[in-house]
Length: 562
Image (cartoon, rainbow, N blue to C red; front, side, top):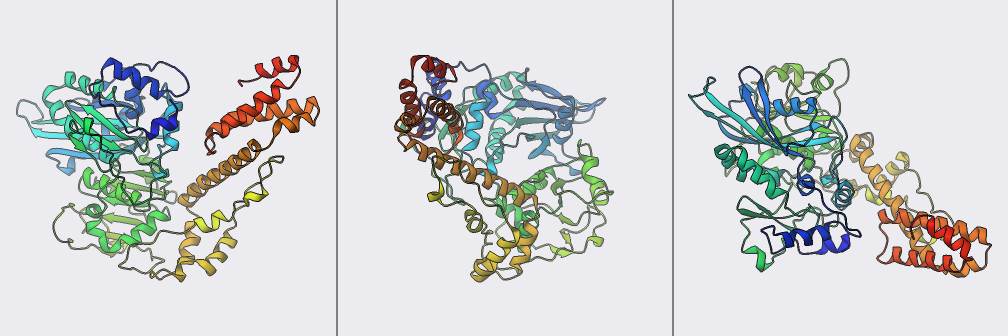
């Protein structure tokens, strides 16, 4: 079964119990084009790297008590980061149950046994949901309750899901269902949870998935790059399986932007500019929940653009990058940090933009709005909530929805005309990006001519062109357009009578053509070509080889796969 057909299917099998027959069918579907057995824990690895239990030891402090599955690899540095990031700072006073998220660097490169298939899924995701090979996410369910039987007087433990996937809402939902029961039943229950996850179908974008776990079924759909930005696709219904669904999630990744931005609602446009331009930004919050939610909201507010700089939803003084990000000997890096420790109020005083928020509470009214204040007024974490910055926004505040920057029009003009593509010449090159030409194009067709949002649009663009976000966006778009040119060139080549051409040329030229076509065949697997193009190319290769003398046929057939 092809990968394309796999994605267009209606999702999980009606047999949600993970019967051997169902699992065998899924194995056939998961590995398109070839029969390779899935190894134990391959399905689990598609969703999670591992599950950790972090507890508090009176002698050692925070410590990883359990890693499941047991063969999961974590370096000592990664374990240390997980330990400290899985617990709120002592000043947070988080009694009861608390959920939050953190992000940390991967210390060493490692790949799953079926990483090629996962990379294919990644290609179909929107740019802002693609996994970053250098980072892990940690999804935390922390419990702190009084327990007089313990020397410390409190039970403190975190259940942590470590994953490459930025599916915040999904993993918080999963944790909310499994963590309370885990704290009652301990390791045997955790083993059952992981066993259930190892029966899940892979996280295929665009497909409705049914994910059974500890007696419930979660129904989700992961977005694709084809989805219209700002819309939520309706989950497909299948009567035979929906009767078993316990939870249907409308989104896997989105955070509640309105709730997170309530205290700074009137300044959201200025914050949007700061994030768009990749400015150093720190969020000081009373707890990891508020910290991580606000940082994730900031990162997602420029969607569908991807935030290309680093961001840490929850950052502590024990983090392995603490010295790197807090040194005063250099300009603060392009990063968004979420912190709760009062120590940061002094350590990060030199940062140009600081958001100090209080408790986030959802009520019927917009709460009292924080004010923009001068940085010199921020002395401690106990300072009043506010946005501490001297930044002057390029655009005037407007009550209408913020209009996203329109760069596509100019970048599309860098693409050569399709009529300039010849099958007998190399694909034409993209024109180089010229900042001066782009700025000139804005003067004639920029958003300042049509948008009700007035201000220095040209200045905003000039600043944006120097940011990591523009660099990352442009590199991605350039790669996409280059692949499109190569795809158009390949399609033009397939529409020619290549056998007729070979009969008019020498054997040496024909052999050279076959070798180049075989290279095209290998490269074409990753190109956005029309359906049937690769099959047509294979037919051209076969027909040309069969028209050659037998000795050449044997050589060319052995040279690569035909």
